[in-house]
Image (cartoon, one colour):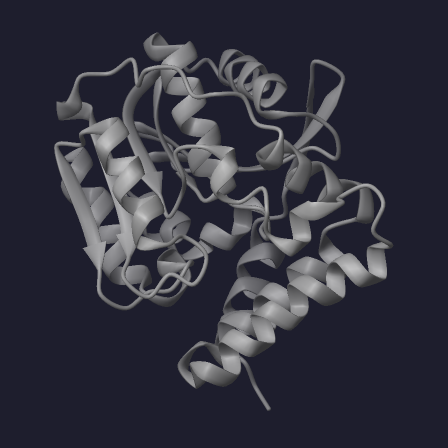
Length: 268
């Protein structure tokens, strides 16, 4: 049976293979498209490469300089924040708008608070305000001690249960299962989980609220209403972009609406 999401993303990856860029002794995956307009950096969550934003990259790169990032195998929130700034230096970007989803949303909040001069506009998407809100979940209980087969099986079980409850997300879940195994290595998966569980306390946002946007979905199975409320309370965004339906990955399943939202915020 065909899967339009997998097929579309595969065509994009074939046409736009990810480059490997080394900074601070860590190697990032980088996809860059667009030659003019504002700079926009996209950072995914735990279960994703930068090319999971392929639909936004294709549309927005006609009017913006888009950079999508894939985490290195090793690192932490603090180290990755330094890396993103180093990558910006390599790409001659004094500043950029940054959109991060889930784990990426936590990272861009940290960057905005630590290096506010590097962030033009902040998009905190389907994310959280404190690591404690996820630390007790099964996949975070014993990140280093759990065999990788059991760790992957636990995450896959949650994804498959979501697909059974919401068949409209079946194609998305199949795509994410490809990310989980084999695209994300054992070391990389453990690193990403550990980065969030052990993440530092977020500093104050560092930007005026006119340059801060939040993104959330009512039916997000990972980010609860209380967690969404906490992000909004912490950031006091000028606007909260709200999806009634979109799950944890509205940028994949609602790509046109998601891209239009970014265009509105950036005045594209």
